[in-house]
Length: 542
Image 1: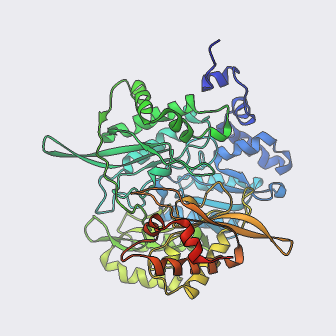
Image 2: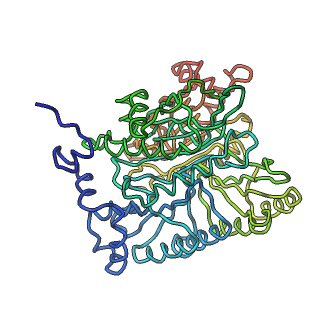
Image 3: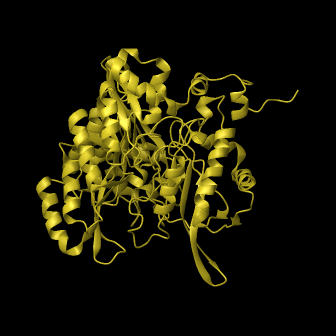
């Protein structure tokens, strides 16, 4: 008897057992819930059917913690994190009207709201659409917000400006019913920069800039990585041995998307991410399958330079490749923006950016960039930023922090992260101000790793413990994560550190590093060289 392959065709024909999620998606496409959202806005929260709560994710709408509260979170679709001054004003207005006066920048370069009611969702959709912003595909088993280099088209060092390719990929996937029922979430980064700051290593699909010389002539195009991802089973993406011309980026990503749609492991939801299919097939078979769909072979390429450090914060004042223009990166620790600040930044962009070039960009480090500032306008802009208390020259602790939503709003989290991060860096700036080296500290409230704790120098994952029999929040501490050369996920150093003591733990760990490092050695290099047991012994943390 021939075994039935658990592919999409078999799922649709009912030839294999369906998970509840696959059954739900076959009964009604996630994109079709839009009509129900408008109906529920009239009939109220109590009328929402259970499966439609899940389908609403296709439009960026999640139930907020607790699930029965009647409140929702909402993520937006902002390809490449690009926002105009007018859009920034509208985003800030909506936060004030519906979101208790704040919003969050996410690690996928978009905005997330909280405290929304179903009755308000149609109005929010309409207001967003009035400035050209959508939410479709922001969540659910579909292609998520397409990310890229935050300074694409601006950076002197980029190999190729991937903005046209990023926008092409986004336009092709947005509301595309050929790809609205995927096995799980599908994350894409499209970048042409030289330091891989768009993190292709941990995306399902990620492009990066690539140079080659043919007959003495330099060509610039793209390489591509497939199968990265974090969560409880992290995988680093594998590089396909090929060179992509700029016009091939979308056709190749389209082929990858079809392969994932048709062959992803839908019968096992915990293994349904693209990373598991890549791990099972390997990059050689994946390339063969792509070429079969394309109908032609891709040009082979094997020279892929990898820089040592692929982490950059994009903060501070930097000269653009365009004459006389600069971009200014502003720090928002943990990504939270309050009290109309986004509108104020939009106003600054409208006031100081070169005419017709008022663009703001959100970053995957949860920060924000104002672009296209003429040099003559920098002093006035800096004065206005200072007056607003906006930090474009942050401490090392502030510039290196990332945080997920945490227990405040997320139904999966077991610990507070966002507010704790803000408290932590204030403590570290006071108690550990002696430390001057670069350090990246990330917080995730659960194993899902939305705060990307697995790639941080020091990563914290939410946990629970007891003190005198009383449950308290705690964190497991991991060290040594890095992308770039010697890429690796970090390793557990110490479990269940009481939350209120985390800043003391970090300070002591940094003292251990400072005392034991070699000249010029980074924290990541140190954790490569020194065994974990030696660090634990020196740390002496009870």
